[in-house]
Image 1: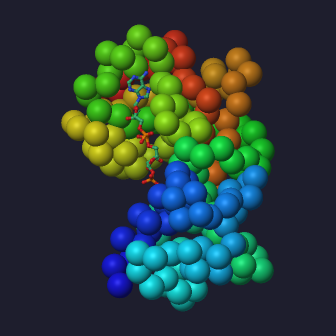
Image 2: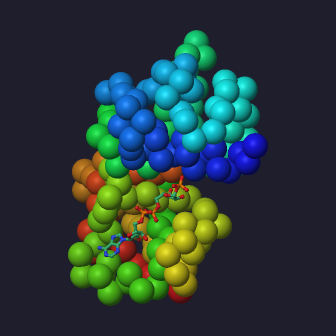
Length: 177
Ligand code: HQG
């Protein structure tokens, strides 16, 4: 079984369209694993396959609860969930990878969360560049997270080391050339 295919399926269900298979998520985004297995028609999903995908996922996209009964996506949702994250002090600088063709709009409006719950920021160039490359020629934006934080904007860090903010106004952005 193709683990990447299952990972994409889990992302789709747990972040975006649980109702496409009649699944309900808790307020915090948890799904009951047995229910998820029972409602999956696309392929034969098993607890073992889910555990393998969760453990081997390159970005630790999913979390299984300590009792092994529930699963959730760590981030990236478009459905409304409360991620239960505490605000944290960010590093002085964070990066956002985007595509060159979005720059005009970004430098007019700032970074907006679009379909997701938050704007996603990374600590490493490598991650930011691969995020940007999904949409075209990748470019790196430097975010003055220290100043944003001093100005009272909140930062959250997910279980898989992605930094989340509501938005990044233009004055905190520079093109990293
Ligand atoms: C851009 C992946 C025009 C923004 C990654 C981005 C990440 C604007 C795109 C996670 C804009 C949104 C999130 C503005 C922002 N005008 N374009 N004002 N403001 N944009 O996919 O950050 O593989 O929703 O630069 O690793 O690319 O799914 O966000 O290019 O962590 O686990 O609008 O998705 O994780 O795209 O990626 P996305 P993102 P997964």
